[in-house]
Image 1 (cartoon, rainbow, N blue to C red):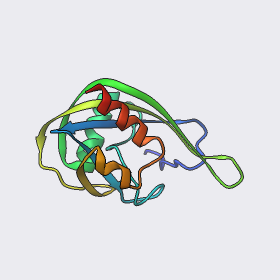
Image 2: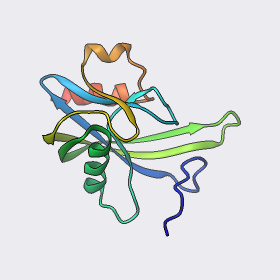
Image 3: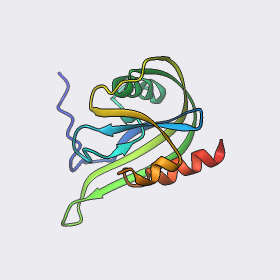
Length: 145
């Protein structure tokens, strides 16, 4: 029987995957429906499960959060997110691999732990509550298109 996944105060960093999905000059983001960072917008994605290949985890996470089927392309960036508590201890620690992805099917809708999923222009990103570092990654990806 699998153990409960406790992401707070992990013994080791948690490996996660994220999807940079572009369509007609817009990027797909999801609004987080659960803590940590409930209400923040971020790239679709999440934590890899034990025994799961990176691209399989990415496909699963995107499907769970957006109802879309994607084809992962190359890794665009490796990103580290450490969220300290008030005492400075690492309450959350993630190493995230962000992939450029193409939509292959499905119909966009928020699902699983996302409360919303929408396409945004580059200009619209400035007014959003985004997870730390997300805007910089997205801007670099827009610049590389």
